[in-house]
Length: 225
Image 1: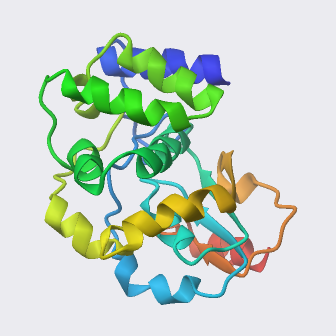
Image 2: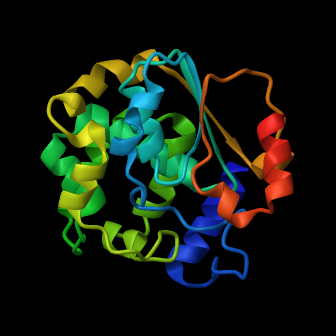
Image 3: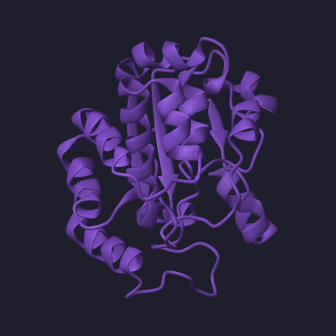
């Protein structure tokens, strides 16, 4: 799976393969750079929860949930790429200053080599699998090419809006996460959630906008299950 993900990602970034298909969501669909929701409005629902199930997407939903220090979080996504971005953000949160984090993920990058230096800092906190994935891209492309390829969404990201929408970027929360991240059991599942099996029970579930891309009957069955 990792080898296939690497090959697909390299082909997409180089422009040799397109991941833009008729279906909005599929196994190689885009990574969202930041959430297009307002987690600040529903953050309170994650308080005092033990086991959380959440869409991965940009990773921001899961990172915000971590602020509430649950025992475990399971992230799911139909695309194979978002989980790598989530783990990259988590590595960055543990190694970068908030200023560098915002610069790297939410500002428009240029072709400067400083992004390679920033990546070298965060890669030390990546697992072997995630390190291999991102190394395979940074060894051949610069962050400008990766960030502006169709591997990522094309929506305009405005840093001040991202900060306003995400609790983890406000006040002391960024530094708070450095201690919380290692304490929370995190796992990810790739595939269509309508076909997934779950062994755990959850007391907070974030399905994001999945309802808008599926018929109400199937969605109701998913909720009942």
